[in-house]
Length: 313
View (cartoon, rainbow, N blue to C red):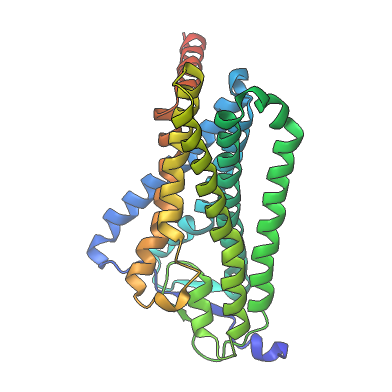
């Protein structure tokens, strides 16, 4: 496909959220508050893990990367959405749209792989507690995170390169609040069979397979709990895995079918609600899930506040 055909659209128009003009002020304040909560909450988790030596464990190593990913994931779409709520002309340049789509897919996939790594950590902690230290070495944790970044980059890059080969002849209005891949494919006047095939194939790799790995991990965890009498150590591990299971439910419950079956997404309002769930709500709730359900995080938070109060006197 020649470049002049592809560059016939220099910008896209985002329709944004389907809300009435008189309601924009309320929704702007709501989403701004949720975004600030997401950023501050996840940065606080990173700070606590950094400062408290008791949190220098594999689980919190993965959690710190998940917190960074959640901040980045939400920052890809929410600031632009907030700006557009007070803009008459909601445009985004072609290059900016492609970049936003790349980063969105990258951090969404990275979330999936990090959650899967955390599931493996829970599995080892409960099913092989005596060998936990030997298995979950620092090198293995770093390798799992590195692989997550590489696979996420490969996934988002494959979608981006294929999208740049498509032509956008006249239509440039995206019925969404960000540059969603499915919405962009609907605007193309080129054959998108290969794009949809790659979308489905890559979706199986980055969503379905990790989800299956998580289910298998929790299957082994459940079997181990039924065999072994309850102990303090297992109770602590279960508390941690309970937080992780809540995050898994939020993440996969909102996005599981979104990109695996793009043809089923015929109702744009439903797409927007689902997108808001995993770009705004889930990243905001993750810090609360891990801080309220985890005793170590509570103690680290109390220690930080006590230190801040001491120095302020």
